[in-house]
Image (cartoon, rainbow, N blue to C red; front, side, top):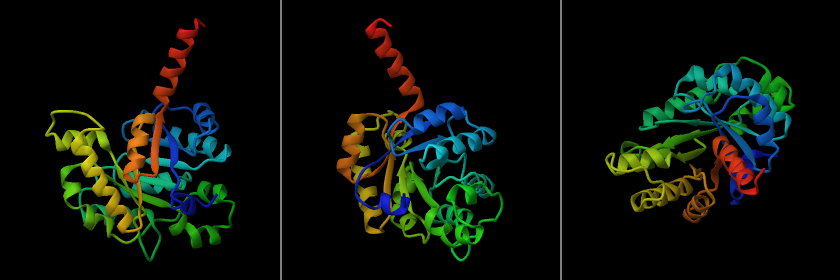
Amino acid sequence: MDLRIRLHDGKPFLFSWMGIPGAQLAGQLARAGLDGVALDLQHGLIGMDQANLMAAAIIAAGKPVITRVLWNDPGLIGQALDFASSVIIAPMINSVEHARALVKAAKYPPLGQRSWGGYAMVQASGKSAADYLKDANRDSLVFAMIETQEALDKVEDIAAVPGLDGLFVGPSDLSIALSKGAELNRLSAANLVAMKRIAEVARAHKLVAGAFAGTPQIISQYDALGYTFLAAVTDNDVLRMGVAVSVQLGI
């Protein structure tokens, strides 16, 4: 699958969101029918030592690895790309400078200064090292998280940074910011207005609009706003729903 083409075809790309470490669980979720698997290295319990094993299991299942890195740090971004992440999501991109630093860390020259190293990404691509390098800036996608008032105020300028591939809304943090700490509500009126604007900005700059959704209801509402790259369900929720169904059936 050409992921870049797939993300620009206008159809929803739905993926699971993992915070629980474990390669076996990652492989199972990758085979559960969604389009990809995200590893949350920011708020999940997954460390780099576990992430590379989980990534291998996801790739073995034929699905792309999406990684939310701990921070917008070139070392962390480089490691995630080295273990064959196809998509990097970087949190708290609040300025043009932050977005430029993200691109610089994730792309090879002339777009950035990504360092060459590690071979899991070459092996996963099925290409020679030379062909991987030739295609890497196209095939390794970077999303800037928009989740603060500061980022919202500068979203047009952030979206214009060369080399950026998408905007990814953290709706929980955004709702906290917009309400000045009064509520956590991914579907608040203020959130939906702001998210509509972010999606329009993404579309104007030919970027992919993504967001954490988490439920069918929220997926539907975000899809209507123009979001196509959506975290559909977390590993915790999969386990919780499975247990709830078992209890209802008396298993």
